[in-house]
Image (cartoon, rainbow, N blue to C red):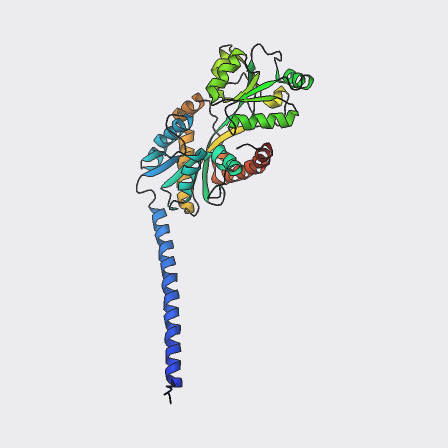
Length: 345
């Protein structure tokens, strides 16, 4: 006959109490760890920055974005009292570098210089392992850059209004170059074709340079291009400028009318660049970084260098984190349906 051992009620109660105490201690330890982690973040924010800061640029060295990043980093160092190191992190249309910062520690030492391409276009054309809004804290807008609609000198229309009339009277006859499918100039061309209900033939190139050469020689009729690349050609009389796609005339090219003035009111396309930090970066750190951005953009020497690159500097109130957040969300709401409808990849 088997022997059955029965636990006394007193012993059972003792074990239950011990288990409860263990669980309470475990919960307390977890809460304590969270408290001390939060305390460490607050202490870190109070002493920020105490070491070099990395400003990630999700594109290769040598381009316009690289020049912008280095101008900003050089002057922000003076405001922050620590080196700001530009790190070029290339790949997948800028999503590799952007994703790395999305996963970085939220301590203010890893930032990303992104913009319309990385935080709007990529959200529509790529499957991203991060959310362009939810995984970042906005620091501040740094520059904007509208496009210019330019044309071949021998092309009959001499103004934007004449161009719109010509396209209506000559369906299937016009040609527009772009700097590659999925590029800003291609998306602008898609938007233009939708808005004008024209049937322009698109000619995609492997970059803006070859497309501009064919525009000069008359192989294509019109093209959207960055002012930094096209304004000197306009002034040299090699191509014609129809309008700039912004509400205000360019600082670097005030002679070019806006689309509102020239005949397409509301046809606004502006590339822009901004700085973000990983989600969860403490508010005092964001405020410190934003102050450095605003001080940098107020520096006359910096402003001269940026406008010399064909860039526009946003107003002080547009440089604030909340202004960037609103602008970013508005751009997503505007452009995602347009890009998806065009099928750009």
